[in-house]
Image 1 (cartoon, rainbow, N blue to C red):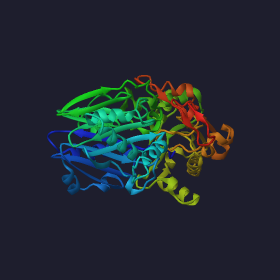
Image 2 (cartoon, helix red, strand yellow):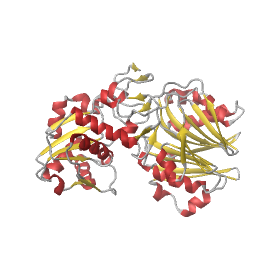
Image 3 (tube, helix red, strand yellow):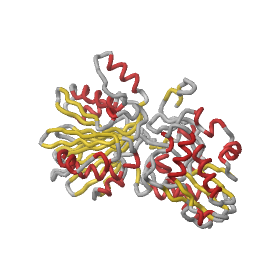
Image 4 (cartoon, one colour):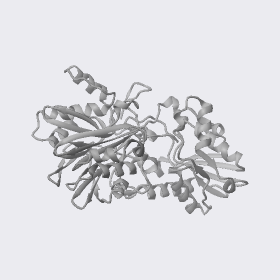
Length: 463
């Protein structure tokens, strides 16, 4: 619970116009990837304009704002802050004017070498106005454009400076560009709607605007739209893909297909693997909304134990982890999730959640089930134990905050008050995406980082 990913990106070229409204609908479909801030930049008659603010997509944009933004190209962004914090000036897309014209950049991911790059360019006279790594990316692209024949070549050259996770949509006054880091940490796909070309973090955003999925952007690839045509620059430093495996467990919407694999099917498989690894004598299987629900159905189907709705979720309550004290956080959990007494009263319950991070929320939910009359609560996680932090755009905390780093499984079970506790094995983790056309990063579960990082807890280089 309470794991969050940095953001979602969207971009569209459509000579017929209405691109800002299409981007609005695309961002609505990607809202699950970030709820703190959002923004849209659009190009109309070679003029770039941008509107962004803190809040949800439906609250930030009005009909008047979208009409003012309308044009033949647009990019959009929904943000949950990891690097840089949630200050308003960190909202994206980031826009800048320079000697070659205007540029807008939206970024999903997290760079590992941000501080080194900032220091390098600040000594050359650069002034940064935000605290995000995304501004560093925008600045480097602008610098490389001064020595490149085109903006897509500038993006390609900029990638040689960037180390870490990034899926980008970039817009100049004439071109729309998308790029994915050489390791493919974060998803990015391409779609078509008639003559229109669309880029998005997930295929569900393509569906929302009536676009048909074409393919995923490959690791290390730059794709761009010029005069309505889609073109590609495949970079020589593209590597074996290391997509974040947590996209399938938690981040992505179940109706998305990422790198060839259905997210829904992955979660069903995770539940089936849990049923094989942790058979339980129980009366009902329930899932913690939302990402635990599909895995719970997979467990029920494989085990033969009936699945039922175990909770009613209040979708109008903010995040529990931002409450100022423990009592407030516990009250927020009660407001957000209410057990269905008719489902759990007098029953032995298998409860499946997507993960266990700090353990506090899990304990509160189990207490709610017992108060609702559950005689037993067996908790299973459709992810393995978190044993190391993430440096690529997911806010997995340091080891000192990770439940599994500081307690044995039995100690964890006792602390959260479960009758039993189990985690998906790392071996089974790699079975949940059999159709994926990529490799995976599972460093938060294994400590095997695909690229070198400096461990914040121990000060040593890993990977």
